[in-house]
Length: 344
Ligand SMILES: O=C(Nc1ccc2c(c1)CNCC2)c1ccc(F)cc1
Image (cartoon, rainbow, N blue to C red):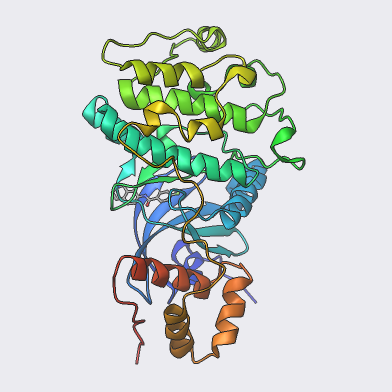
């Protein structure tokens, strides 16, 4: 009996009836991202496709990213709707971010005015404060990992390097990772470091990139770059305000113990300028209660009792039903209709 090798298209057969696949919208190291349409709602999604055979020793990173994304639910973190794993492939169904990378957004404008940089930076600080509060550190914060959605809101992606040390954020990490230009001095000198402190340094580099359009520490020669980072010396261009220079100074402290903490960051004078509220990081929508209207719509569509639908969503297996629920909830939040296309 001969078994024919699955052709490319058939390895996507698992998506049949759930998502329609469209063009490739991104290619990362070991993943390809395709545009998808969620069949029942017609909503667009991003489908990250990974071949387990090519992942090799990177497979644990992907598992880490999936576990982190399952735990994290925040308005400025790219949402995981569904995970599909078959013999040689993993499909992650993710929130659609058509605005592309913050990196390109800055480059197109040379640099951002303080007002606009502040709106973005408050969103990033909100996401990082939330992650740290959940006991995670991202460890690869950079404009390439911040995407814009269709409403110009930032969504943090790529938790492949994130860490959740067993003993919480107080335990030190050893692995050196992320992009050198954004890496904290203690991280590149191979010392033990705390993930959340290293994230705060990266926020300093990110803020500098937003306000200046180039990096505070840069050099073609990596060892020269490392020296500049370890010295923590950078030049502030003339256009920076006093308050922004003070914030950069508090973020880019070589000694992690002298660095501003994420809690102090929430009410920093530069971040508060023009705002009355500190940066909010709790998920305002995070109610344990599920939305009745969406539950009923799902229960009617599938002809399953409401309790069965609730059970499936609460089990957090990231199935098609829970993906459909999340998309219905998002449609409702945007005031869109939440009728499911019954194929009859
Ligand atoms: O949505 C994403 N990318 C995306 C979506 C639409 C478009 C682009 C990127 C860029 N070209 C314009 C259209 C996306 C979402 C999550 C992710 F991890 C990686 C990429």
